[in-house]
Image 1 (cartoon, each protein chain N blue to C red):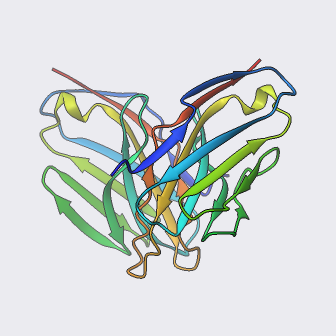
Image 2 (cartoon, rainbow over the protein chains, first blue to last red; image 1 turned 180 degrees about the horizontal axis):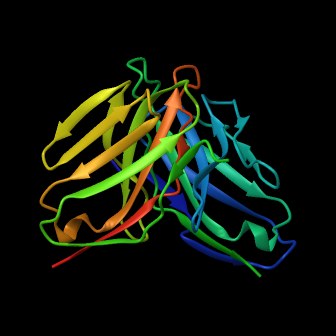
Length: 115
Length: 112
């Protein structure tokens, strides 16, 4: 199993450009998440999904959109990139933790620079 | 004020030292507490998981939760250079599904 994979690994955008980050998981997890990680800020939740066809806002959703058309994929879109969106983006997935655990498995990250 | 506060460090210790990492939080509804370890340029991985108050031990690692003080700790005994990483605390309430609130992360360096 590959676990959680993210595409691309690195990207440089100019202000105003758009792009889509792809997250894929092969663990049949119901829940998927997008985070951004900035120095001194920890991980902050952007958007998440509790199942195919569902999405919800997290802590810092402005400037991002998401879609979950297939259970195994979760896409994060930037419609008009801004320098403030320079960050490392992590995708994660978890099973529906009926035991309360909800262990999140993370991808390797995408390093995005917006100039 | 952030819901979860964690000293970002960096923390540097000699090999074999006991390391104490801590987080405080403000939301009394938090019931599930986790510690993630993140190596440089990698994604976080779950290290310890604790429900409610108490201690949990796994090898050289011990997680403690004191809900009355809203304080959680991770202790690493006999620290090794391979423990050098960023440690993030995370927590959630019982009615938030899988949503986690993370601390800022503490960067730990264990010197040989």
